[in-house]
Length: 125
Image 1 (cartoon, helix red, strand yellow):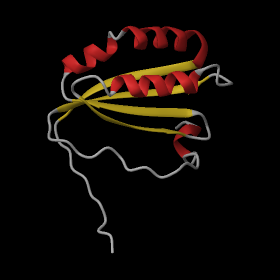
Image 2 (cartoon, rainbow, N blue to C red; image 1 turned 90 degrees about the vertical axis):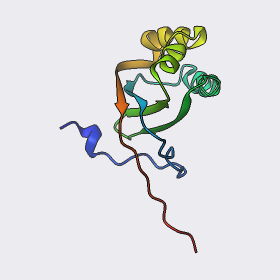
Image 3 (cartoon, helix red, strand yellow; image 1 turned 45 degrees about the vertical axis):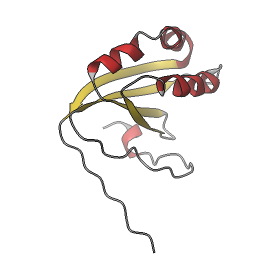
Image 4 (cartoon, rainbow, N blue to C red; image 1 turned 120 degrees about the horizontal axis):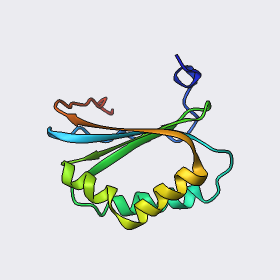
């Protein structure tokens, strides 16, 4: 087992996870280890976050990075056509190319069909 899996998640403001959606839908799981330094990554990540919201069928994303350096982003899409639209978006393609050259030591991408989804939220008060 990698140290990434036993490292606590970096301290960050607590955000709510993406709500459960009515299946079926798709989860695009991107795990990565970054290179040293920002090198424009933060600005580009913000831009990609804005652009993906314009894709019909985009349902939201969850992301975290451990102190050990493992990053995980899960983007949820209604269907494969929505994933393909994002995959072929010109700015996203340019960011992926730059990322392979400058931002990532390694990454893995998984696409999975979600057939069951549910959630829980503690009652307030």
